[in-house]
Image 1 (cartoon, one colour):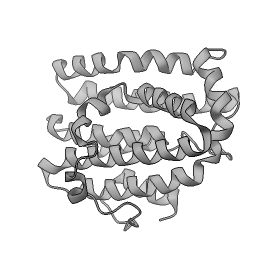
Image 2 (cartoon, one colour):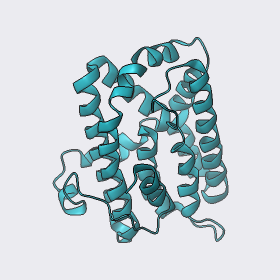
Image 3 (cartoon, helix red, strand yellow):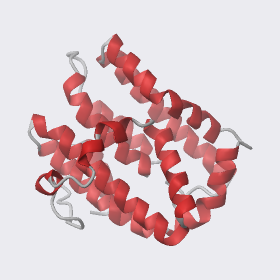
Image 4 (cartoon, helix red, strand yellow):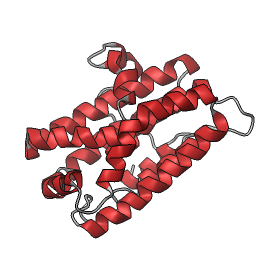
Length: 228
């Protein structure tokens, strides 16, 4: 589920990029919906090669969906910048989805403990849903800051949850997987929002219950997934 949070940054950035008449940000919501299937197995975290193969299929579908959107809706320069930013993450993705690779073996080693953090992770995702609701209602110039604040809050929340139960090594591995999802782009774009008091003005307090009402398809999918 960590990968779904990255979409927040993409949603904020894309609002300034989309220019084609046949392009709509709601398409990105639908692409992101595929990522919500990433952890749809009984334990919440894949613990076998077969489960990982299934999840890699979801990731591949989402990747294809985003590639299609950027091909139609961004300029050649923007596509070149995105390709440059995601070059390292694409290599990690290929390795993660290859049986017998080191990164995959390391993931399977940490997976049982990561599965135990799912209740805490869901609490973190409540804040993501609240953030999505705020983004959909935000003024144009506040969308990216709100997305970054939501991303930073979620990243801090999940890091604390994993560190508490699984240790520092698992946290570092989780950060590597996050890079696989979106390279260093979110951390670069949102760097100035870490511990930034502006986030307290853009987002409600941590733990605030989402309303369950939003124009965002992705937000409604989160609502269904979390039961809010």
